[in-house]
Length: 399
Image: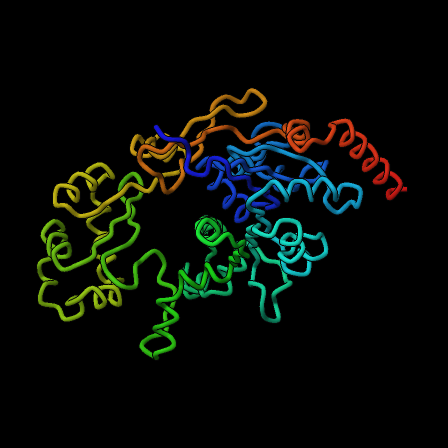
C-alpha cells in the first residue's frame, strides 16, 4: 500500500469546534502532519460532550484524530518567534476567525505570506470576508436560520433546527476541498493561496434549489414535516413497534408501491401523475401509507416493501446505529484516552484505493509540545518557562 497522499505536508490547525478542526482532520486522515495549536489551558471545544474526564469531549475526539497537540498562546509577544518558526516549516494554516480577529492575532494572509511566501491560509467564517457582517461570529445554527433551512424544517407552526450540524460539517468538507485544490495549484505554480469557506455559503448551497424556485416565482416552499416536497410517498411512518422511513421517487417505484399497499386506485388520480405532483399532494399518500404501516410490525413492513424493491429503512437511535452491521464498514475503532477503551471514529468520507490512511487517537493537551519544539530547534525548557510566565501573568490579571 502506498503512503498517505499528503505525507510530508504540515498543517497548523487553529480551528475550534467543528468546521475548522474537521477540515484539518480530513487532511490528517490522508497523512498530513496536523498540529493542533491551542492555548495552555486548552480551548473550549476540548471540553464539550465529555466522555473521558473533563478534557476529553466526544466532539474533540472526532475532530482531532490523527493530530499532534501544541499548547502555546500566540497572542503573547514572547511566543511570536515560535509561531513564526512554525509557519516557516508549514504548508497550510487553518483558522476559523473573522478578518478583524485574524489581523489582531497576526494570522491574516498578508502577515503569514511575509513569513512564508507560498503559505496556504484556509479561513472559515460565518459570513465570508466581505459585506457588513464579515466580522460577526456565528455557528451551525446561524447558517441553518439564515439560509431558509430552519423555515423549511418542522411544520408551518413550528420550525425545527436540524440536530445534526450539517452546516459545520459541510463547511469543513468544502474547506478541505479548497485546501487540496490550493495545494495542487501551488504544486503547479509555486504560489500560495488564501482559501475561504463560510457557514452561510455552505448553508445557501444546500437550499439553493428552493431559492431558485423562489426567485423565479415558481413556488414558495413551506415546512411539510418529514415529507419530501418533490416526491411521494416519502415520509417517516409509525409501525406497531417502531418507526420506518420510505422514499418513493420515480414512476416505476410509485407503481410498485401502489401494488404492495393496495393503492392501485390512485393510478388514474391526476394529483399523483408525476413526482412533483406526488410531493405537493404527499399528505394524502402519507395518510394512506400510515394506515398500512400501523397494521404491521417494523420487520413485516421492511420485509414486504424490500421484497417489492421499495427503499425502506428502520429509523435507528444512536445506540442502534452503533450496532448496525451495515455501518461497521464506515467506522474505525481506535484507542480512546484515559482508559475508556475503543471508540468509533468515522473513516474519511472520501477514500482512495491502495493509499494508506492514518488512524490515531486525538492527542492529550500539549502532548507533542516538546517534540515539535525540538523539530524547530527550540529548547523545550524555553517553552516551559514561557508557559510558567504565562500562568504568572494570568494570576496578576486576576489580582
